[in-house]
Image: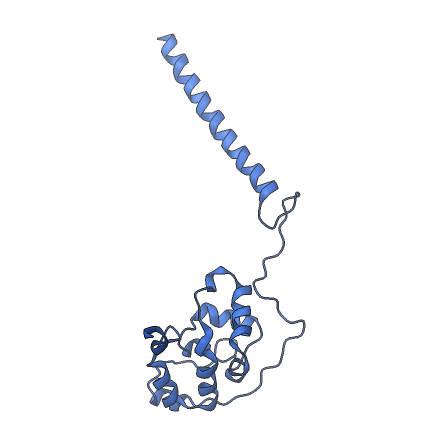
Length: 172
């Protein structure tokens, strides 16, 4: 009986030793090999999009919510909670990309309409790998239509798009 108990405690000791060594290796790996971290274990602040030193004052823009509703848009908010334009009305832009664009300083439909695709792609690339699939090809045109209040034309354009990409270019 004594030999059986000794074997059980011996196996239990090896198990505890393995758990301790696993924890120790994990701690050492985190301390010395963490991405973006130094030897002291600190990491650089995670800033997806650099913000400008001086925030721009929002420019007033009048968007006719009744005309948008008449064109078939079910949005109850054409403005985000922070007072900026709600880019989610644009085909291919969801809540996260809306936040990324606002954080980058793009606040109005007119500002998005004046940008080129390369500039928007640069903002999305800086925001991280989660936004690699987003295709801003048609966002400027859609944003221009929103800024001009041409809701029927916007609806007609969006009927030809899937996730912001033209169906015509995909079928070729």
